[in-house]
Image (cartoon, protein in one colour):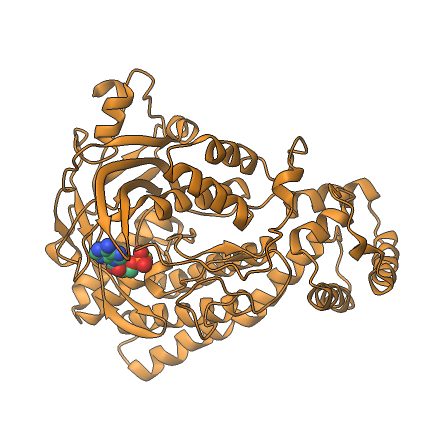
Length: 483
Ligand code: AMP
Ligand code: MG
């Protein structure tokens, strides 16, 4: 398999037993390749052009392990809906870390690959629908220029898995700059062994934040860097109307990439309380709560670092709290600047906040489509919508245009930044469902068309009107956990 150019250098595998279990993926009966991401493979300097579909199916099911791989299941813990649990890869294995020619390292992980020591009562398997869903949404997020894990392949296993009804089993190959989570720190911190915690800290810094390796106070630097990264990430989610759905601490990376696309979805009509997940009855992870939860998760991360911040616990807590308390101001600044970009505004004016909030309030009141309202402002209306004839909106628009006329830059420049901030296309729920249903029936055309359209969300204006409308159905969209 040398022709593929795998270049494994498995540093996590070399950590002690406390961090992982050494385990191979469990072979499957009849693997069949469903999706393969050639573009991603190429960007990883991998060449599968001489590999047959049959061999690809074997490779991406785990039936044929690449030379140099060392499979492990990673240990981690997590606060799930606020409750702390010891977890770990219960249905995934990391087969290794592939290094590209430009010396970038990527985890190659199989999700749905069979039982591990962390499976608890689960079967270690995943269903086709949720794996395809992760493929679609993660690739859409990447095209939206939002940090995320990627999807390289989906293979059907040829085995049924038992849920409420029998479902087709599948394995997703996930590519990530690492799978270290806030929950990984929680797992190691719970073991109360300072040497292990230091190992994880140094490993994380070396892998993700090498710029602070020699810092005098690298623990605090790491906390600040992650706070900034996660803050930017959640601002990006807010920008495109993304609702993650399960922001448990085990689903928050220390790399700052979006991870674990379970019951996530994009908001159509603007409503801050939007929740899609069937299990989120209290709205803990609703659209508007995502920044608050990000801060909460970061506080859990900070708790893990306490023993390394200062020997005096009280002092350490005080120092860490100061960093966590900086979240609101950093978030608000990033959020308002992001919203300014959505409206084509360059310089800042204290009244911008009111201009922005008044638009959002109007959208909420009139049940306007979040994405399409900004498309309208950019004069990219693919469908006539009388909602924009509303007097209140017309008045708001006048204020906005006056605000833009105060800018020193040309109107074209405003449109330029708006076009970078406002997607014309998001993965509409009904389009995702339509594609998944067809794929379950072996018709891959809708999913391939959808992936193509989602690949250029800011620039493509051809034949996309079909993908721009929200569902006609008045039924509330509900997503289910991908187990
Ligand atoms: P997730 O909902 O994918 O974030 O998973 C939460 C935890 O449950 C992780 O530790 C998973 O490994 C575990 N898990 C989810 N589904 C299964 C399954 N089918 N079998 C074993 N473990 C699972
Ligand atoms: Mg998870």
